[in-house]
Length: 250
Picture 1 (spheres, helix red, strand yellow):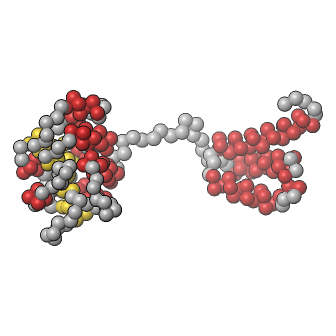
Picture 2 (picture 1 turned 30 degrees about the vertical axis):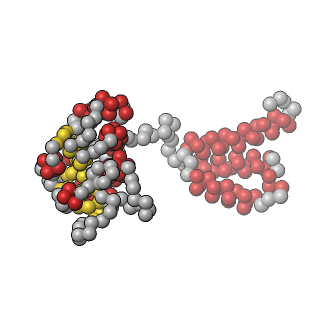
């Protein structure tokens, strides 16, 4: 099934550390992004990349290499460059969350690039000049994120904004409908009887106690099976007391 993220392209300008490439590939696999373009990367072994990021052969085999940044960006309709500092020149700036909304508005027109720079110096001005949007990740004064960490923040925001949460949690194995009014009253009646038998109300006001218990259970919002379990516990208390009265072993 086509995804809005199919047209998201991650572009690394002169990446230096293969570990960051491997970590990025892992992020891509988890967040549903499939295209990675590398501009003049340091030599790396694809087998080692896959060894670090298990189960990502499809992403690793699709990595593209380019000799220049303009070539890597040539078919992109929008380039969002990630930088740790604002430019001196006036430039559209966005947070990753704002970026995600802007980017997803443009993917219908063609590929959109998220541009990242070298690990040590980031993107030079001539690279930033090729972008239409500057993205900064809010941090403390210590603005020094690892390259793969920055990619994770960007891809996560895109993944959430696109509604592409591919891992759907299965419903509980023993899901049950909400309890009926009769089930509520039966359970509360049995709780009242059990507390009466253990003389809980001897020094407490029964109405106040049961109103509190009713409120507590309501806020817990149990389903029918869960409320039945609470009722069964109260019934077992009464049965245990009855057996003790009759002198039987537990």
